[in-house]
Image (cartoon, rainbow, N blue to C red; front, side, top):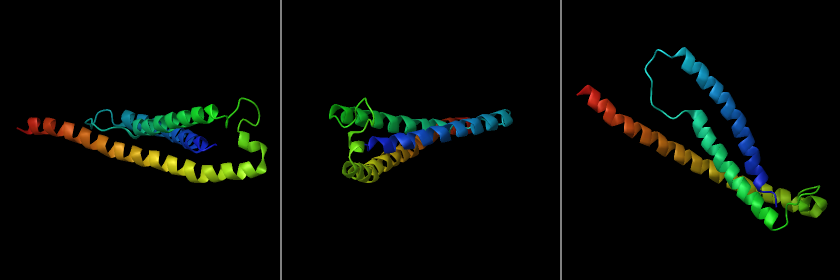
Length: 133
């Protein structure tokens, strides 16, 4: 009924953290402009990946809920909000299914970040070996 709202809320929080991290990275880049550049994926870009994964899944779930008539264009927008018994079922679904989906997407994102870091590190390794020869 409203499980997509959990991922949407997490995406909003991740967006705020991403913007803060971008500002920190800009300050670090400006202060360390003369130092050697290290090839690695910035955290703000990785957070962007998470944001897009969460928003994409949320959009698809919202579309599915609209298709089944659980989300409507008039107040209260969620059909479960009109009946207190349905509201409890909706909150239970959000607490179980919504949280599990958000945790799963975040776990997949963490694995993607680890793999991406290893790929970048492996791509830098031949360059380092060539310069030392």
